[in-house]
Image (cartoon, rainbow over all chains, first blue to last red; front, side, top):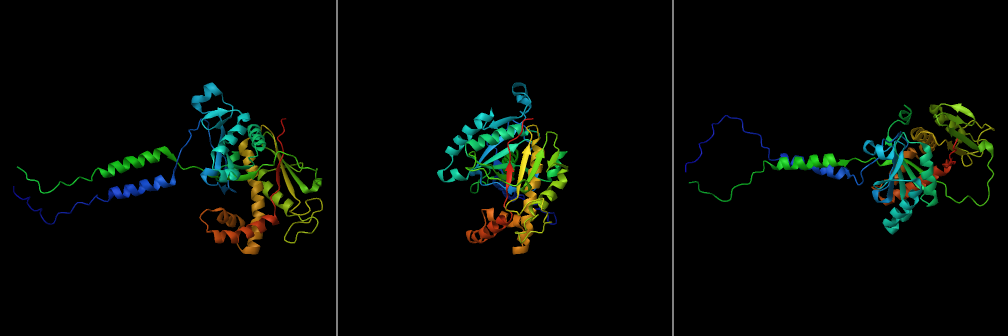
Length: 160
Length: 201
């Protein structure tokens, strides 16, 4: 077997792509750490309003989420177009909010049970009637710490 | 015939493709969650033991109707003017006991920040976005006044101090120090924002 002939000198050497995987892995790890997996699929439209006097929410394990909004396109036929409450993965009545909160609270670690926040993720086109029903349910089960979750932005943009 | 010299090198060329595939998978399946909002405490269910009589002048009544119009103390008000109006009301210092207030000392308005209560009432048909804007402006009024006092006392914005205090990455020793300052400012302008039951008509 003969040896390969030497390349002619003066040719530009190819750029090594050996470090490309490293760069991509770096990107990958970045995205893996900054993003959170969606844990329940939204069945309601959920465009939050804007506010600028906001505070960051507590750690994820101390938060219970309640979604409110119009049922999204594929559920419109069955559930209509009036705003609904979504707890976990199903549409619910305001009367079920209390038991849902108690159930979620029982799942959390005992030390955290007194520090839970209820995050209300409400679509900006929902009516206050439904929200006040939820609020009175929350008061019944003594879950008084609520957070109206919003996007950060100018609050007056909500009015348009 | 070719004679092998040691094990052949595994090509690493496709590694990038695999990594890209993973990257795209994560990009598609994850969302950057919004995790900020307006913190509020709801009033407890049991009514207080004895009825406290509150003077009418110590209450700023904010009513939002179904079409998003705003009535502040029986006066039709623009949403943009709400913040200043709330600040004037809180900072009024009617009885002169508040040494740090810069208000007009109007006898018709609140006595001092500790007594001033903002009462928010809304209709069942009020849009949520309008409600949030009103809430935002009222919280903003408190924050602006607290910022002013924090700047005077500690040369720092209150909102900033509070954010550092609540941040999990702040070391405990610093937290201890901030805790008292935050508490002090909060007591200067206690947030008394009452949310009445919604009216159905």
